[in-house]
Length: 141
Image 1 (cartoon, rainbow, N blue to C red):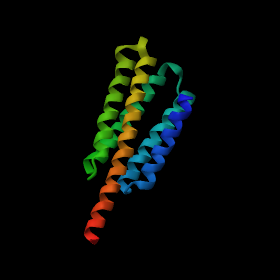
Image 2 (cartoon, rainbow, N blue to C red):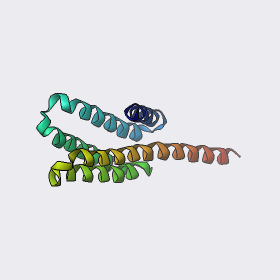
Image 3 (cartoon, rainbow, N blue to C red):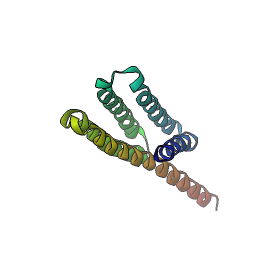
Image 4 (spheres, helix red, strand yellow):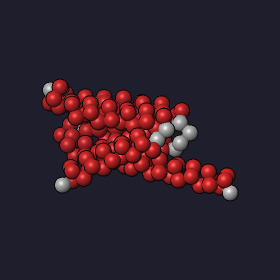
């Protein structure tokens, strides 16, 4: 049940990000979707011994891409997303390199930060759109 709810949240979040976002926001959503698809494909392509390291590399590429977008964006959500994703990458890094015996537990903590990052994206886009609507209504009055 949790997996179904998480998958629905994931699909709805990236869908909302694509529909509600600007061109730069859509670029960020594209990177997020690419990272998700690469993470899903990793167990099929990579041997299990290297799976956690491959996912860590995918997360690092996503972090670099979102940080680039955050530096160019006028919105705040990419900065929040990058910060929360950095927390997840830190947990994943600890799981892979520092505490390999706790990899599954640490990956669960990393997943928590990923969910928080997606929530920051959704709320940031929602409040940005609401703020733009209020500014537009005030300029018409």
